Length: 113
Length: 120
Image: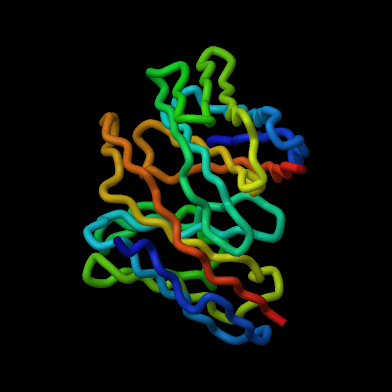
């Protein structure tokens, strides 16, 4: 089955700096890669996703890049703000599966003033 | 509009007791998923429903775990004879329609707030 690794497990940045979170996946048949943000006591919320026919996608301060050859994808947050502090999860989904997501172990992002 | 709702939000039970966790998906969403999140860990897939059938139960950790979905809407996850290692947050998600095999139609999974289960 698919395996997703996520790094780093914790990340502390100063407000205004950029944050990068990286994930690798094992199965080249994966074709959909969402990123979720989870705030304390809440369920994960989708913030951005990318499909395997696209190399990069951007939404305001958030961008995701995908390298299919290397089987890794990254989340980039620019101009970080205190409200960006949360746990971020990457995930992958195999083509033709029953659409279950395989998640990374999460990155706790702390944006300090 | 209303999102995915789950109840109860918190549940404390004694080892050996049975518990039922409920999920109300977004109206009109045909696909429903259960995940488990242990403390400080990622999300672990449990089971997936398409309508009332469950084509993928591969993530259920033991036969103490079962789930059903009725009317293509509400789902209940039941854990029998709970153990301390069952303590976790149980998350439910729904999507409008899952991608068919080989199909390009990917659907976002929307998560509920979860049920925090503590087995003493």
